[in-house]
Amino acid sequence: MSQAITPELQQWIRQQAAAGQPNAALLASMVEAGWQESVAAAALSTVLGGGPAPGAAAAGEPGAAAVVPEPDLDDSPLDLDVGDRRVQVLASLRHPRVVLFGNLLDAAECEALIAAARPRMQRSMTVASQTGGEEINEDRTSSGMFFARGESDVVQRIEARIARLLNWPVDNGEGLQVLRYGVGAEYKPHYDYFDPAEPGTPRILARGGQRVGTLVIYLNEPEQGGGTTFPDASFEVAPRRGHAVFFSYARPEASTRTLHGGAPVLRGEKWIATKWLRERAFV
Image (cartoon, rainbow, N blue to C red; front, side):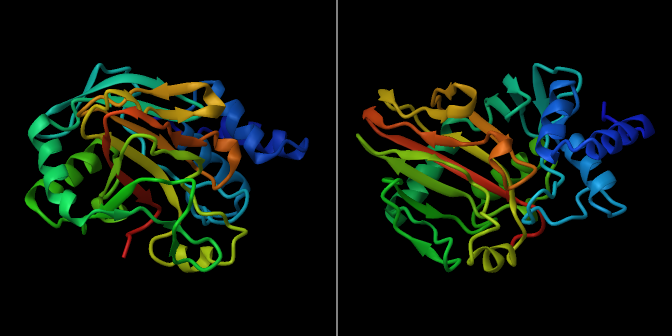
């Protein structure tokens, strides 16, 4: 069941804003009170952003809130129908907005992605915030590659499944990225959104707006280590094959508490697939 932005909620937001409460504090209070983060963010944007529609303000602007991907968890389901399978709901946090899923991919799909990606792997790059291009970052010591959106039958099937799971258009997703972490490899804690203060950000946003959500899918199981950590929430997700962790961020701000990292692999290797979700169609 979806939540409505009621007149009472709008009046409360106006009163709190008039009292000097910052947007980040209002969002946190609403989420703690039981509002979905996407609804809370849309309400803030509607009341305070000056636009008639939720998410009308650009998420790249400081203080602006975006509508974000959100699985349908209002009735606390044990699993969700995504068309060709039922995906398990294993855990859910409100703030930060984090949801752990099981059975998103089967073993054959995991192996197919690894096999297709393996010959195309290169040292992982990160976005160069100064220029909008790419660069090697010592905080990220994996190798990786990108599939084009809809590149193969298996990629197309997985993208359609993700779109249905998160209620977000396929076109609003970047190409699926596959990453491999060997022993000692890690990705130190970072944010996935693009910093509005950096000079290269406008060039990045021109391709589809801000990132507003991330889905990390585990394609295998390392023997030890390699979890996905959320330091601000003291939460860690174990890398189980076929499972996935989703998190969203309505603003490009630390207040979303979506600082996260890939812990070092201690034994074995870790393969993951990452889907980044944008505000608009990604081109």
